[in-house]
Image (cartoon, rainbow over all chains, first blue to last red; front, side):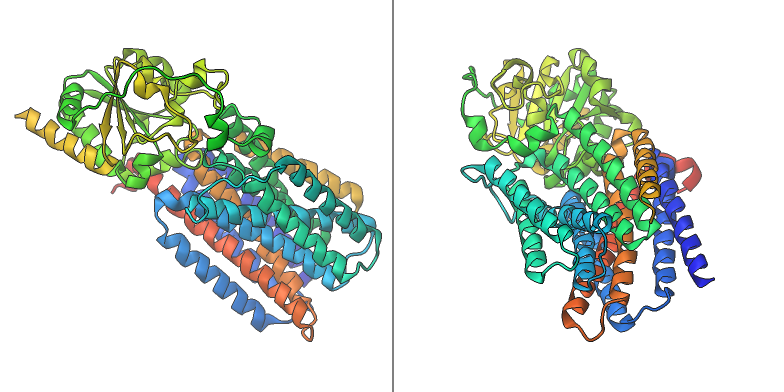
Length: 459
Length: 100
């Protein structure tokens, strides 16, 4: 009877999870969806405590309380700009948990039969890769690990390690009670594989990688669900695995970077340095006063925010400036590239934080034709997503990536801290164009000065 | 579990995931990624079950089980908090209902 109640509860929980994810298809219902899912998670946890024959409750409660509290506190205190690395690290923890479940099942000698052993091994492999890969992704986004780190024979090492992990896995599956040396070695190789796969990947590709690792964790959880015979894990894990895969594809498509390219030929500074046409022209500097007057007397301004704006925390200032211009009769809209920020949609979250209404925010496809009619395109801390070489230079690593056509606007103003190349290390041809002017300074300070000048012009 | 029943569940869940996500607008992709991240935090439940059945006399089993539950709980709690915080920012477009 108790068992029936537990199974029925898991069923309800799985249904609520799916409905919760479905509610995320609209900003109006999204928050309610996650709150339902949150209660479902609490219910699942409480019900699981009732499972017959369980022991070690003291240890279990300590683990739940400490793990939950640390994550709750860090999630509450993290800045919105640092959100992507938090998503990455929490995801890695899920993958680690799935791998640890498999490890414990092996340690207990509870995995019997080829099917169960195969699923346990697969979950352990994918979970371990997701765990160590996410830790690397976190370290990179957090700035702990500065450079892309590429081995001399990177792809061969990747394939070699993957093959070794599979071989060790097959060894585990073949023996009914695998030797602990074999199991430990298998986990070490799997974890190393995650590190080696993700460490050469540059910042520009990070969104795709985080999404892929998220899908991995989902799959790992699903596989371990099969091993434990727990339908809640199976359904939630596989649903996330499938949705994460789709999301990864969408993102890779938005960057015109097939997933295999992301993993096997990452964009790095070194790759960007070789080949490529020489860019002609010079960068022309602009003062905040000039920028203010050009925008004040424009009829249409399109703002293109990038990660540079986000790290400077300038989204509030930018929105203040936009409102000021609108009061003066200027039409102001925001154009967002699908991979602006460090995750797709990250920029929308940051603008929402500043209070920009979403009817002023447009996607690449919606707005790209409008740049030709705009008097000013104001690029704030964005780089690669506005680089016209993506259209023109076949040798460029970003060739073919859809970009925002800011160079079509009458005037382009670029707010940038210095003359260096962008996050991907690729030189930007836009900055040398005749209609482009550079406004040097941090987004916070530069936009602050523009606001002051716009106000002065009102008098 | 029966082999074929498992494959059916796998396939249906995969289709469900695909369908649910394909209608989500780009502006919600980050919260969605984070939200799905929270959903696989249900791994906590599996971790609790394995720790609950670990041998109380075996420190290795207890340690692995503890790590599993700790990581699972962190995945669930962190995923929830971060997603909820992001979605709270989108309420601006819903003023009629909120009244604030």
